[in-house]
Length: 416
Image 1 (cartoon, one colour):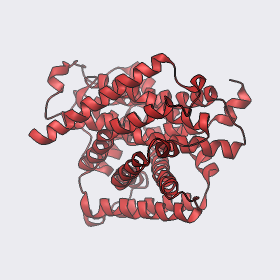
Image 2 (image 1 turned 30 degrees about the vertical axis):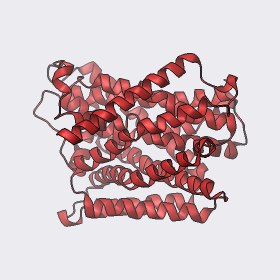
Image 3 (image 1 turned 90 degrees about the horizontal axis):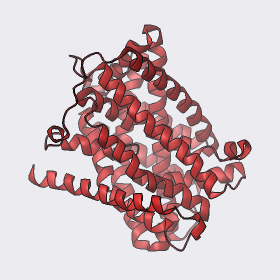
Image 4 (image 1 turned 45 degrees about the horizontal axis):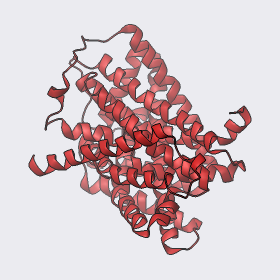
């Protein structure tokens, strides 16, 4: 790809990566390394590999047709779009609550904010207000530029910490735990939650298709399908690679030691920052604290925008009416209020909130994967625009993989 074309296309894939690097990486991957060493690495690798086709299909479909996946669901059958909208409405409050609650912990730690336990929700409220204001006053161009800066900052600091950790070696001997000792009823919820947002929830593939069409409008450049797919894959595999970096950091610095990551958002933020600073030196402490907060803030912004943008589009397509700015403002308002209400009235446990949000995402993954597969192999795309045979086989295996683990989670809920 020529340099000029690349920079005109660059955006949606990086936005996806920056949004993904939030809870799934900072929280879940670090916890996996800290508690199980490299024992759960196979699940992280499997989730990244088997989810890849369905995210790529979002970018591919948008570039090939000029439409989002949401429009595609309607063209398959309106029942599919209604089902997708129902999934969006079911998950949006929990997911926004989870990412904002994590970001609030980094906010409190960064600025040394101490609050009575009864007012734990105030930093989350401030973040919801900021995210709403950012999206209400800005446009896609602001979102695109801001996420690129935030993502670059976190990428460099994570890679630096990762390589220093490799150079120094683990704090305690790493014992490889046999897989059969890890896959048991007690650990299954965490494994499912780990894969639920690894590297992100599959339903967010619709966001990427929307961001792709918005980037084309913003830049005025219509990339080829191959150019769009290349840009997305770059962001995707950066995100996947960073998930492994966080596992290594958790395993090398915490596994087998008497140190643990606390089960509350402020304590967890403190633990992650100290994890980095112990590797890079105390002088990096404020830099890492700022990096952790900014990447979580970027995730908050991307997640709220994604849910609002996709819901507005779904409603508009179902009603066969054009979108307008007021609808977008309504949904970011409702998402902010619903997410805050979830934190304020229903959830007080950090781990419980994260596991609930990630599990919901994983349980609905097979359905979204199937719909995305149907679309890219339908007559809506030319044969030359469809994925190759290898990607098709990987997608079929991926649908089976996601279905198997979703059934496993259902079995767990029924019998344990």
